[in-house]
Image (cartoon, rainbow, N blue to C red; front, side, top):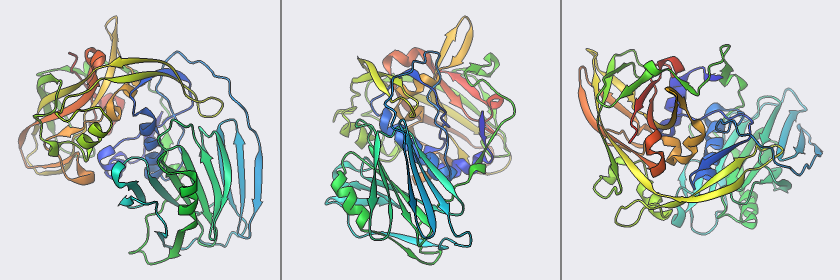
Length: 456
């Protein structure tokens, strides 16, 4: 099992999408909501940003693993450069892009500024290194990650159908084609040799190959001051570590399970303070029309309507849910093997949180995650496979004691303060009888987890 060396730091960096699962290579059957591919790609990107390094991919665990026949496309391409040697190799559906320094004394520019000379018509910048079309905000578009080369490094790209070389005035690299049904179905990686940086780009389906080439030709990295610099990351394999003890995450200790109305004593993540929490009431709603849109995460309601998940009156809509046999991204790809139409519901919780400490506590992280738990013969198992069914992996999308922006899930508590709030999730109707709240406490270790039974 892998564990963050500094969980609280990781949570602060991740903000409102706080925790990214570390995925390894397994093949299994899953049921996923229709935003599965986009969510999967977003997790890949966020894992790279927040960990400054590569992670293995783990698909949700189940016993039904079936290998698919894959087209193997082995081959290595070597390119000699003045300062670097670059190796590109594809084995099956995995591409590796390796950069080796020829001149060990070569140092990357301390700070660089990213700029674009060209953007497709209608595309705007939404945040640093992120661009999307005005009529499709926060979806598709272009998303960049800037890597600083400090040592020899290999970037690994699973789920690659093929790749082709790309060259611009200032850089060269490759464009990787992902499966057509992925929301971001192309990845581009460019080596800026003189500056000592690698730029990675995720391109959405709404960006054509021709437009991506034009964007690439207008990219520039210029040396600048620290104040003006674009955020860059360095590959750091030490950012997470292997735990010596292997803990089975699927088993839940019955003593860790609480019911509606039970008080739960806990320490907030990263805080030396005593708190307690209780679920006062559980409601299942067909509509979110009466809920304040300001208490949803940014653009969430707008996105639900754009995706057809919510009508203009605020009623939740049914959707087609796929059963996917997941490949490992190396010798097999994902494959849809079944589909069915299911109804959505909104799980609306009334929760009381109390600061039992005689001191003010700032930045208290409130992030109870909805999970799917199976009960068999009195034993409870966390069915991580089924979390793919849940919107945003079960992260709460409604919280009426929220902070602002990336601090959405953070709130300050005064000494001995008691707050009653509401937390909400979208869940498939046939999953209501398996819903549990996974409540992280203290250091995120399994032994300190709290599970709240919210089955309906």
